Image (cartoon, rainbow, N blue to C red; front, side, top):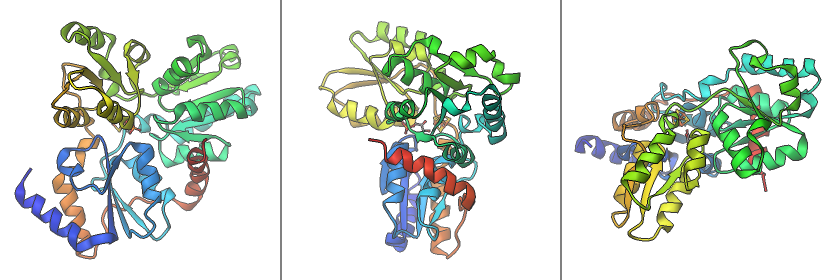
Amino acid sequence: SDPDLVARATAAKATLGDRVFVLGHHYQRDEVIRFADVTGDSFRLAQQAAARPDAEFIVFCGVHFMAESADILTKPEQRVILPDLAAGCSMADMAVLGQVETAWEHFQDLGIAGDVVPVTYMNSSADIKGFVGRNSGVVCTSSNAKRALDWSFEQGSKVFFLPDQHLGRNTAVLEMGFDLDDCVLYDPHKPQGGLTDEQLRNAKMILWRGHCSVHGRFTIDSVRDVRERVPGVNVLVHPECRHEVVRAADYVGSTEYIIKALDAAPAGSSWAIGTELNLVRRLALAHPDKQVTFLDRTVCYCSTMNRIDLPHLVWTLEELVAGRVPNVITVDEETARAARIALDQMLALP
Ligand code: 13P
Ligand code: SF4
């Protein structure tokens, strides 16, 4: 990266000192990650944001829903900043509050809402987390989805899982022993979700029709090809991948899990990783004694994660030095109060 920008970021960060705390998600570019005080998966970053009550500014190098969660979990006087406001998440955008409320009203009309526990993946807007909090549900991340579902099935006999169908299905079927038939797909663009009353009454998991377009690129053929190309390869994927891909893989877990698995792997072992490319590239560099390849032949960055680049970070830090506070992410108090219930429920999971 540009040495002038590196020097400017270093200088601005030094001037701000403890007033600023920079969080970096594992999918961020190397040029940004080097300035992060803490890196992590979305669960760890939510915990870390809450663990810095003295930092005036939390600069969140990640995507919008993560910054919203950080705002909800931090003190009111702390400001959470997203260096590029266009860093959203297409999966989070797939569940809009009005659509979710329409689905819930339908469950109420059917008389099943009392049995349904809403669970939302962290990758959702604060509005959706607020809906879940108001209806006694829980937030989950890819590192605690099973624990969140275990808890939810103690509260009710059905789960309404938002917005990632794959994380919901993979956790229910591969980790909890449910049948594929126990899961139904609720399509918000179809009347009644495209489901019959009977399907809704019988289902244990009502999955929202959302997905991650980055992880959706991996197919069963990617797994077959890499096993042919690299004999003895360990296939390690993120649970946002499609069900058949996760089923065909050897290991599945969050970004933090993927990093730890590579740390623990013996020298000489081979790994094909099915997650975002910035992370896979960093893992390949960090483990020269292992063969680390990307699960697919095509390039596959998360374009919105990638929007946070060094020029945006430098601009953000220099604005703070100049006494201006750009790109503040604020969740309104009513939504935040409801969303905090669902987030706190997650943080309290056993
Ligand atoms: P984790 O960091 O929780 O594994 O999630 C990956 C992701 O897609 C974040 O958007
Ligand atoms: Fe959203 Fe997928 Fe990007 Fe994660 S990788 S931020 S789920 S689009």
